[in-house]
Length: 397
Ligand code: APR
Ligand code: PHB
Image 1 (cartoon, rainbow, N blue to C red):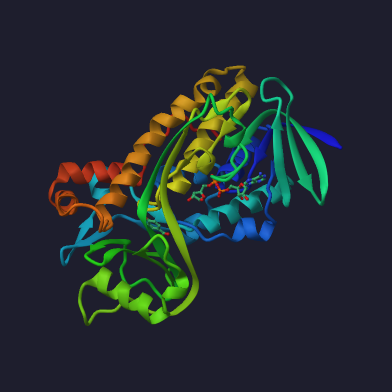
Image 2: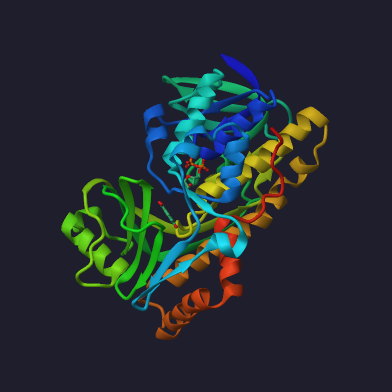
């Protein structure tokens, strides 16, 4: 059986769900095809800092009810290095703030909104091929319940993450990719313990980076720099807490609040960009097109920005017969993507200890952090990036 929609969306992550929601508000039909089951797709634990622009988009798209109640606005962040802690008050520096609200919660809000208007989301439906992206209808082949099926669409949005099929469907002679790997990973824990600090702490310690974040007044999210080939099995709970105390607080008698560890995992670090972000009727958004290392928490925000730009492009196409944004979608996104890549790379290299790097480079990183906490000009640029650079096109709702 084959059916037809205006926009076929591959992936029910934040990029796909957000795009579908924005298009729905302009009466554009979508079908989302998601390879995983609903529970898995909605339950994944990921980053949790929202730029001001992301919060504004969620609010104006009618998705802000729980975000307003449970989101935790932060006016600043702490940097701990060379034995001291310094507050960067981003609100004072650039008039904008960030909000702590887990990606898991956003995905849940988006999925519930989609259910409320009976939007079609097919779970356990793996896209196996993208055919005919040159002309309408483009065809998406997928497999669900052991059956091969097809979906016809005017456009295909590949919001299918780094390992998805969308980017791989762009001919290799057209696609150019840029990649950077880092010689460290993050060991992350979610713990049933109140945050010990009122804002997020980024620490550069001689034993490695550490980060203290939160999800709610009762749940903390904490990370430690570890080796790339490390495993959670190498770390007892006691060792994790002791390393967090040492790196975050630098005081042998101080302790972060401890509690039951609810989840543990290792996150690799990578920077990656694919150009162009579109090919004929196929458009990439979110992790399908780019990856940032998690320092600075930009992955989710970038995904939402791409979705806003792609939604604007498709809304203008259907409602105004105007293809200007659609034609320039890739260039418009990439201009912002590269700046966010730069920021994430900078936060990562300045805050981590790369023991293979020369001592000269390590000194330079500490000088950069010192500049951040002593130069208002440097700090303002950081604040503008951290709270979110402007997004070129956001639909009206
Ligand atoms: N068919 C159907 N679905 C697919 C396929 C496929 N062939 N390949 C991948 N998917 C689904 C995945 O199962 C996943 O649910 O696409 C979805 C992609 O979602 P995300 O990986 O969350 O990507 P995105 O929406 O771009 O969100 C980016 O997620 O990884 C974090 O840090 C990242 O915060 C960033 C955000
Ligand atoms: C998180 O809360 O998971 C988080 C916070 C800040 C980061 C990255 C992740 O830079």
